[in-house]
Image (cartoon, rainbow, N blue to C red; front, side, top):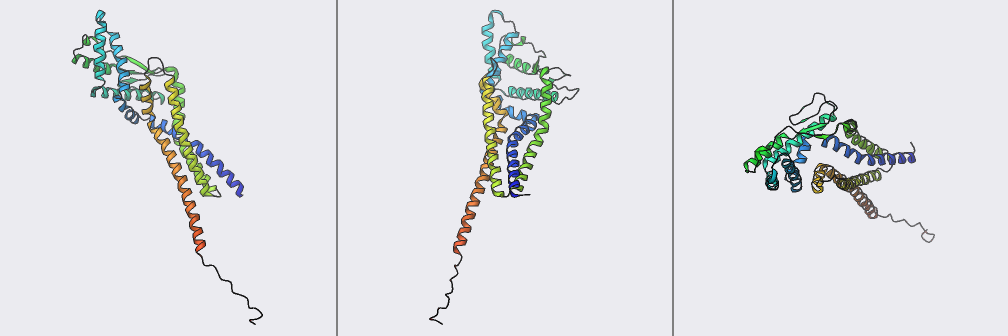
Length: 312
């Protein structure tokens, strides 16, 4: 293989590897991060102590409780007590336990629906056939009722604790989401592997391997930077397109919690690429300086004068 062909092929493989790397990180995060119930619940758990999330849940939950009980002329008074009690409840250990339970049930229901596992049922979430994925809020309502009753809120014992199933994934979205999820499960493994194989092959084919390693490192850093910028852009677009009544700070906190691992990966790719590129530049520079010093320190041979006619 000619030198020019090797260089061109090495450049193409290196570019493809750097292009696939951020997509591989994204698909791996979706397939092995979001699709893991334990990791999902762990990522969402700190939000139970986020004040924006607490206020958003308390406002919606309090309004729902006041709506289902008939208080007549005492609506304003009872609403005030209910809102105070619910806000107080969101700062208890019972709320954190209910938050984790609800997130686990929701995630398991959605995950089972996407994987098309028949005969699925969980304690608080369910999916049947091609119907919507739902979650039962009765345990959360029961805990709130118990807290309000202990705080002697009027008519708290009249709050109905019924099995209210809330749809978290409409039935019409299941088919396209299921196909996309299967693609992510495959791409989450093969895209990073393919990117690594292409990078190693490109470096092996390169005529100047030091330059190829530097180019791969800079491409990796660029991919990490682009991934971080993409996350910031998607966050802004998501918060700008929220439905009415949804708290933007709470939605931002949820987005940040879900993408924390992906942001860390983007920073790691950026730092790793720059570190390798800097290391290659430093070793090349000091290597050339050392060779020059060794060359200048070598003894210069003194020429022997030729015999002149006078000497002869």
